[in-house]
Length: 301
Image (cartoon, rainbow, N blue to C red; front, side, top):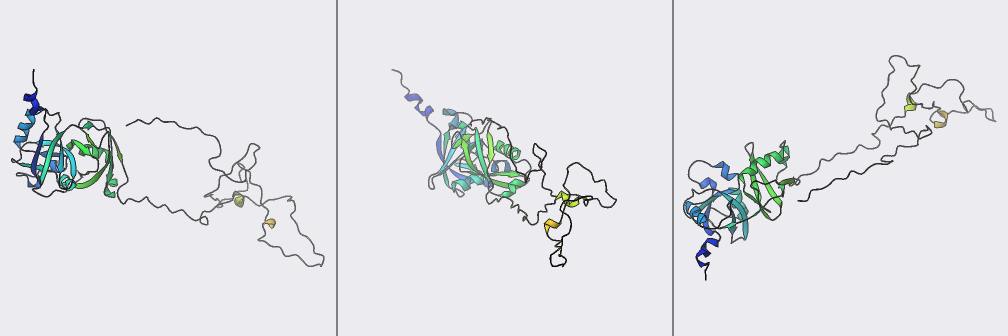
């Protein structure tokens, strides 16, 4: 009977422990592309082991700090590190609560392709970027995967922006290599909506169009003077609105008695509404009438 015992070592996943160092400790010139991305540098022996194992491509790994029970996911950029060492981005060391030279476990994994992710900037200055989605898309090209709960760092215009990964679909860890992923942003930490103070009603000048109508001429009903029984003259109260007769405002009729230098502009006028019988209604009522409902279809993530 044929036995598969000879191939047991091939089916085993890659699982090794290394001492981790930040990219700034990597010998040679500074590697900003590594520090602002989501890929690590491993030793050449890791490549030899990976080629002999049944590893799915692209190569993705889970990094675990057993002491703090923290983990994240990453890809691999190069195999040029010293034996027994790996170099990882500084933001990744912060997520794992690792110090220089600490032990980290590296295990190969297979992740689903991302369909959705949601980010929250940790600084409101991120809103100053003209097109944040385009900037994020360009920076994520240096990443291989995303993990929910991680705080990643992206660099734009010589400035570092930290972003918290709030949500990823279809799982808590996803691959973002060659994928169509919908991106959403949450309000930055500490962001407050602008407070648009409303002006008091007293400051809102409501103008009556009849105030600019010419004085009425000809016969005016109930306009005149009366006599008292005691013979004394009645004092007229000019503040009494009953004594202030105004001409009815008729829309569309020009002022034929207009003289130069007396032009006046109306500001903040309450709109005049006419009913079917061409009569002025008492007040303007917003949103009164019929309308249609716009139906949209939401794409399921």
